[in-house]
Image (cartoon, rainbow, N blue to C red; front, side):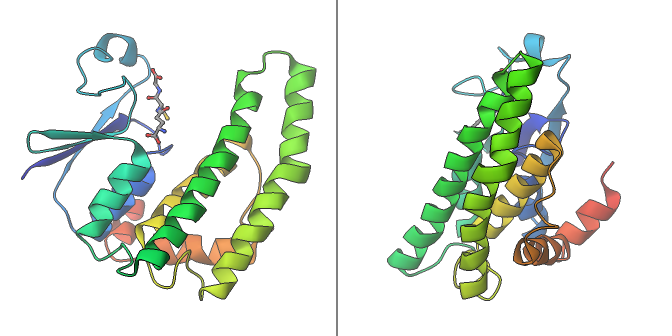
Length: 199
Ligand SMILES: N[C@@H](CCC(=O)N[C@@H](CS)C(=O)NCC(=O)O)C(=O)O
């Protein structure tokens, strides 16, 4: 069935899905919408809640980046077979979502001084709180989120890149196990070529 990933022309929440698709050698159309096109395209794009990314798979449409990653991962042996192991990687990614939710205030805040104070709290407290724990999980699992390579590793790397880019913070420099996982994913077959060719 033909597949289409629709997202903005940036890495954001879409890049980890592109990594999985390229890693799996899955043929797909990488549809990218610019921010200037979005107001007019918003009503045309087949997105059930008006947000991107969405995966169009034949005549089916799936929203929510993590659901898409998990769905793609199942066909590529990237979902743990054991129910406990499966739930354990879900839990890490849902925790990563909690962290992402706590970064949103920085983007919404209009007052420059308040914005800076929120960013400082994130950098000094929230990010170390979460990433110390994420790094421990990686160390316990030989460098992965779960006991083997899963969809969650791809999503984790995508979110690390997103946070680093949008908040201009250095996570990989402070958490070597995170940097190792980023390098591992970047060097997987398919992903490596995608990164070498991307703009
Ligand atoms: N939890 C959703 C978030 C989706 C989301 O908020 N997407 C943003 C871009 S990263 C969007 O579509 N914004 C455009 C809009 O709200 O009009 C996911 O992981 O897919």
